[in-house]
Image (tube, rainbow, N blue to C red):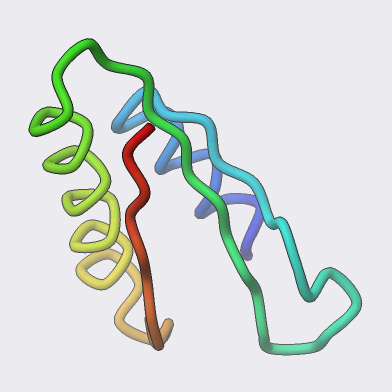
Length: 71
């Protein structure tokens, strides 16, 4: 299930996405998403849309928290 969600997000938004923590925990996943852009506001908007997309297409998934870091 998680693998298909990651593939779908990657395809929809052209971002890098992977489970980065909690790999051995059942029903818990920590996902990292990376977006490369020359415009910080575009990168922030894309990452926000990823969260909205996950919540919309997988209502059974609870997004507990997310942070965005622009470098």
